[in-house]
Image (cartoon, rainbow over all chains, first blue to last red):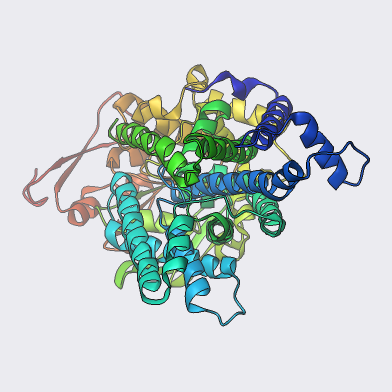
Length: 350
Length: 259
């Protein structure tokens, strides 16, 4: 069943979404070990923008401008990117359980980033996110190849399972490669840092990250949005889409590369944060329907909001300690995965 | 729109599926493709639809080669109803039919009032308006098939390809689909398993092991001498007063011993 929002005027829905996003951002700036009043936040934003404003305690100013704001923006970008990657993979692979984490893209991106950071792969010419992109593409290639080999000519239900199992195999393989690189080449300090990063962590977010994450998210979202009709046409499979005039090979190439890029850039900054690409698109289909014209903007907004809120929970759940954000998203995502698994297997057998 | 296949050969994984098949369908005519399982019917439809590239030979539609037409242009001319296309998405029937407008839409020409009218007319023609707000996955097999045909109707092509459209349908829905084929103004090619349905078409092509075994009008082709050796069964032709064409009945014994 679909909720009533599908019928509400799209512009209004979008406006509500943006308002919630702004509220979540404000919430993320206020909340923390030091609570900073909203009036101070407004003053800091004005000062940084070059407008006159009253003085704010310099420590609060620093916390807000150098830590909380870039962190919240990275959470927003990362959530939007991962959620959109989920939408794209679910539509192209026609598998409701697809998401960059489950299909091993995130694991591949981690391996690529670690290879650059520890082994010096690419000899300085390759950035962390460049390495992550290569890793993500390799992981996707491996998983797609394995799923194809495993599937043979069997029916759709089996092919869903083949893809998920291939994703498990791919993720395990790339996790093992990452572990191998760390065990062989990293010193104890590096290893500890990397392990913490790999669980999904926003605490390292600074402005330079924002300057990379935001443009990539905007460009990636635009590319995905421009393909909304092709994604809709994939509803009944690749052949049906082709016979409706979609160049499916080209579309898949462009969109999977875009997904790998979004995932890779986010993973290189925040580590592998799981289940965002799974939970958010399904929730949004329930709210705005399956048409990608509305689903794409709704998912991007909701993904950003979800990760901002998850980060607040990660910071506040245990006083004096910040949980890796990946733990929070997994606590929400794993039960959601179970529900979608049961529902989709019923859809297949029914 | 006239469809012509010239010397089509196609192998898949090294196995020849189609061997030197040539046939044509005149504009506005219907063609039934029949043949045993694995004889190449679906593959031939896919080659005609431009979904598979032929190893040799070529297809023309309305005088243009299918492999040289941009996919969007091809989709504006040719609609294809694949076999049992399913989805895991919770898509309402009306939205599924709307997808048929895809080859006509762009950012410059978004879905408009004209498209809405075409979609409504397609749903009306397939008699599915009563459940247009239901979810596709909640429908029966026959209802789903009609939604797919309505989707391809909304595509407003001049030629239709249908891969075994009567499969898994009860007899009432089978007859409804064949009536639709007969009433179609556009060119239609469809793969069929029920040979008696092929009498409703203007032409019949018999495929056997990837080769064209016979091609002609139903009364010329649907005769025991052609059908029996291809399908390896006994075939008998008879007439009943309430049907305007002969009826084929089958038995597993050799056709030579069947009276």
